[in-house]
Amino acid sequence: MTDCIFCRIAQGEIPSTKVYEDDLVLAFRDLDPQAPEHVLVIPKKHIASVLDFAEEDRELAAHILTVVVPKIARELGVDVGGFRLVTNTGADGGQTVGHLHFHLLGGRSLAWPPG
Ligand code: 5GP
Ligand code: ZN
Image (cartoon, rainbow, N blue to C red):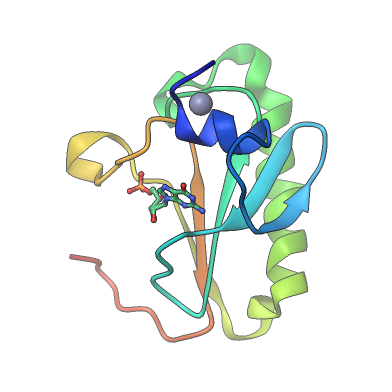
């Protein structure tokens, strides 16, 4: 059994509130939401961060950005008011889970730059 918490969520070993799923990708609500809509979009396969995308992941990366994120944003209704998509990377980036994830945050006005 893997000790990667997001692999375990992707495999259904740890429950999550799913908002989208296909063969390659899972999206679920963040346990500690920072906005009215706060969804994590992950590849089902373990990739540690954007630094670890390989050549073979091109289609997966494009699928996440061109299909999955717009679809979720529209379904949540944050496409109208706007939203933020962010992937924290490494220690200075504030990454706490070592499985690539994109935060989709919306439903309120978000400050920029973040702290
Ligand atoms: P990071 O800090 O790595 O960018 O983001 C990790 C995110 O995962 C955090 O926002 C945290 O609340 C969320 N998280 C950590 N463990 C779990 C979990 O078991 N379930 C869910 N749904 N979210 C989690
Ligand atoms: Zn993982």
